[in-house]
Every structure is written in structure tokens, then in C-alpha cells.
Length: 433
Image (tube, rainbow, N blue to C red):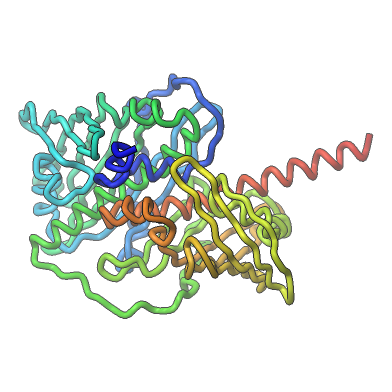
């Protein structure tokens, strides 16, 4: 038992956190899909130009959909502004040997070979009695002097090790002498990771998405804050404002939502003030609202693997208890759900996540699709000692896990709506026979 406790209380484990919040989908065989050979689309100049006005409040992520029939994995794309020059950020990003000084995801990096733009290095995590290791290859691409505005590109290929195979793409775009943009796209197949394969052979897709998001946020925000620290920039601090619907019209971002879900993290310094998520559900708005107002169904969707029980219903307010039973974790609490058409409002009133608030607004997109806008504030550390220790060890990775849980919620609702529509269609077909 002692060695289990030492493991839990060691350095935070992104994969373990992802496992705890993942939905059990059944054991899966080792996939043939190779993410290192799958091109990362990333964010192009048009994408970045449209999202850039949002960055003054915080980073924006596009979490792509994937072809589940082809066993593909979604890519995570994260964009943020950095108050340092592009050259200074590049000098930091292209030297992985320095990463352990400001990234909690690494304890040691040993460079084996560095020649020109290419660097081959080993990385190592020490987590209590457990050690994770791997080998990465980094290649830096610099533009010719005549095209300096094109910025820099860095690819990182994960060749082997306990974190699986995959690829990351970093882009650094200059915006004057003291500001630049940092974009990162990541797709790593954690189903091929030895640790994950031994620990959980289930919930592979949820683990991949959540862990990729946590790692992407950890690296991007780690690079951002260290570059700004070295540049002498201090992010402004402001009092936390009340939770509020963003003034942005999400219909302007619809083309992104055909590709994935958008997460906008509004921050003050390193504090997350609000998370906003935009997504499209390819079902009529009445059906989406019907599912979301079903506290049993919606409560079960708040976290995959959870269940809910309605305690009372009065004047449009439904109180319900929820719980989640997964290995190494037991969470429970109470929430209230309020119907303020077109708004669905949820508050955590007791137990885990107490004080958390989630608001969702549904907007019809024609007759057969719904635009879902959600804005929320909650703290995953308000759950139990294990998650608190995992998420507090590195604030940036904790932000990634928070964003991942919001995406998980939206996708759980989307999945439940789809299942409800299929069940309704099956009942209608049976009635006609």
C-alpha cells in the first residue's frame, strides 16, 4: 500500500488524471493507425487571423473531430499570444535541454545529437516509484531573411517510449519587437504507451484527447510564461468578474465548428476566470434542449461514467445528486439545473466541484442543427485530494485538464442527443410496422 501512496503523491501524472476522467468504452486492441504518419493540419493564416482578436483575454483551442471508423485520433490545436519577441521565444523552444526548468512534465532531458536544425533527445519523468521515458526528434525550420514574417516552425516527433507515438507542430509568428503568437498542434497516440496499455486498456479515445490537451496546454503556457518572464513582462492582474456570456457572436466561428469544438480560456495572469466552449450538435434544438433538461441524462453527461438521481423539481429548478465511481477515485455531489429558455444553468451546490457554474445557450441553425455556447467557471481541485495534488503540481497542465473536461462534457451531451435521436427513430419505425 505504501508504494501506491508514494506513486499518487509523486509528481503529477497527466495520464493518470486523464484516466480518472475518461469514459470506460471497453477494451481495445492495439491499433494499426500511425499518428506520426498522419499530417497535422494545424491552424492556417486565415484561422489565426480570425482568432487573434480573442487572444488578449486568453488562449483559444480547436479540438478536432476524428474519423472513428478509420480509427483516427483528433488533433489538439492551441493558440496564444506571447509578450516577447519571436526570436526570444524560438531560443527557448528550440533548446529542449532547458525544458525541465519551467515545465512540470519533464524531470530530465538529455540531448544525444544536435546537428543543424535537428536535435535528438531523451526525456524522463520521475513519479514516485514509477519512471516514464522516451525519445523525441526535434527539427527547427527558419524562414529566409526575405520572409521573416513567415515565422518559425518546429516539429517534434515522438519515436519511442512510454508516451506513445505521434507528432507535434509548433509555429512562432512575429508581431513586432515585443510580441508574437505561439501555435501548437499535437496528436500523440497514448494507446501505444506502455504505461497506459498496462494501466487501462479502456477509454482510449477519451484518454488520448484529455492527455493531449493537458500536454499541449502545459507546453504552450509553460513556454509563454517563461519567455515573458525573461522578457521582463508581468501579466496584468484584475479582480475576478462575474460569470457572463461572451459578447462574441459565435456564428462568426461556425467554420471552425465544422472541424471541431472551440475552447476560449479567459484568464487574468495564471488564473482562469472563465471557460467558453462553442460546438455544433447536428440535431434539432428542441431535441438538444430536451436532453439537457433531463437531469438524469444531463447529470450523467457531466462527467463520463457518472450517474444522477433527481431529488426535487419545482418552478423550473431541478435538484439532483450525482456520483462517479472509477478506479482510485470516488466523487459525489449535488447540483441544481435551471431552465431559462434558451439558457440552461447548472450550479454545483454541495460536494465535489462545489461552487462551480455552467451555463449553456442553444441557438437553432436551421431545422436540423443546434449551436451550443457554454460558459463556465469551476475548479477541478475541489473534488478530492488525489485530483487536487495532480492538478496543483503544474497550473498550466491543470488548465489543460479543466479545458479537457469542458470538451468532454459537450461531447457527452452530443453523444447522448445522438443516441436519443436514434432511439426515437427506432421507436417510430417499429410503430409503422
